[in-house]
Length: 155
Image 1 (cartoon, rainbow, N blue to C red):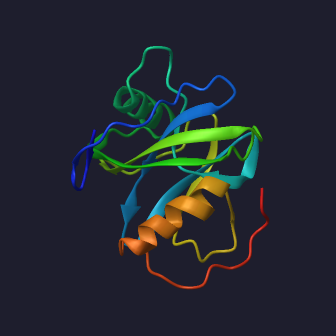
Image 2 (spheres, helix red, strand yellow):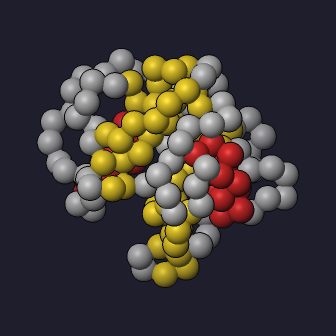
């Protein structure tokens, strides 16, 4: 994995009582791609999901993006590792986040209910990891415009 400063390996994510996921940050024109699931269509997450046993994080990311959105990651790079409550499962979650471009326009499939491009200023319910960790990181790096975030229902 690579960060802006070089190779980075995520910490051990194998805690048994913790949901482990990989996710993609896709930013276009200062908007972040988020998706909602059929199980919770009003809550928006980063695209991605759980690695299969023995699956490497980048392989899991590519598989999840293909299954959920019909896209392939282009030049994915390690962005961050986020710990937050899982919005749907309500358990601790460790999420390895990769910033990536995608090879075509995304189309929701599999368990997804929909997708949106957000700045974080919209009145939508974002998963805690997106709201509290990813958007502030993207703002600090100038990828998403800074500004006040409307109050949201906390998950």
